[in-house]
Amino acid sequence: MKVKDPKWANVIELAIGGLAVNFVVHDQHDKLVLQDLFRKSCSNPREHPNMIMMKFRDEAYDVSSQKPQTGHPTMYDMLDIDDHVISNALVEQVWKKINGSFILAG
Image (tube, rainbow, N blue to C red; front, side, top):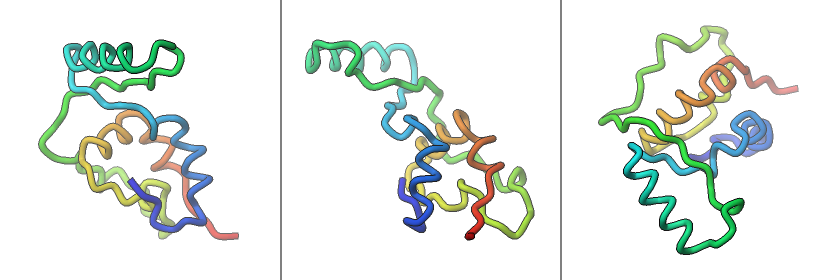
């Protein structure tokens, strides 16, 4: 995931929060496997990354009909996401925040 225009990177990072450093897992089994790997590599549980559990799909969600028609790009428009799992995780976790926030130059 990359921000298309670096001048918006800080704003988008604030909106997404710590989501960008989370791991996405498909199910409870995957979550347990990843937790075991974290335990083996890092003894402090507070240093383990967060996980998002969601069903993986074969393609990215089609959100084109849900985008506001304002003539201004949204935060989601400013992201270049080449992995559909990451795109879907963003949609599921922070869609209202990144799609409802317009990018306006001052």
